[in-house]
Image 1 (tube, rainbow, N blue to C red):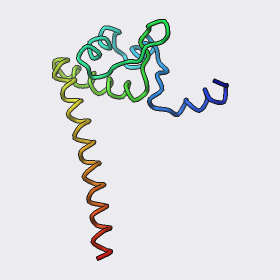
Image 2 (cartoon, helix red, strand yellow; image 1 turned 30 degrees about the vertical axis):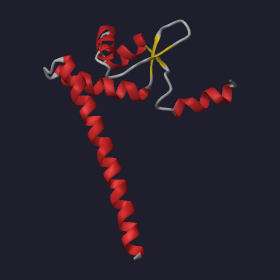
Image 3 (tube, one colour; image 1 turned 120 degrees about the horizontal axis):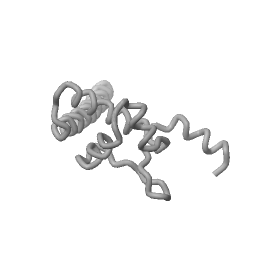
Length: 110
């Protein structure tokens, strides 16, 4: 990988750029919280060659939402389930919008 390839990943939301310590610091939480949401299967951090957890910006956004719910008093397992359901709902709404758009285009051709 060249330096130019590395710079291209700066905008990649899925690139695992953050160590567990840095991720916890950015979220204002503990490393134990990150482990807990990993055990609840909300996020699955990638592992470095040395076996250390690495997090992407996308995963940090998901973790931040879970932390928000936990801070409001929601148990961590329930918070993780809520975040998963919110993500599934968003995806379903996106797919429905695509279908509606495609259907409206086909009726104009008739």
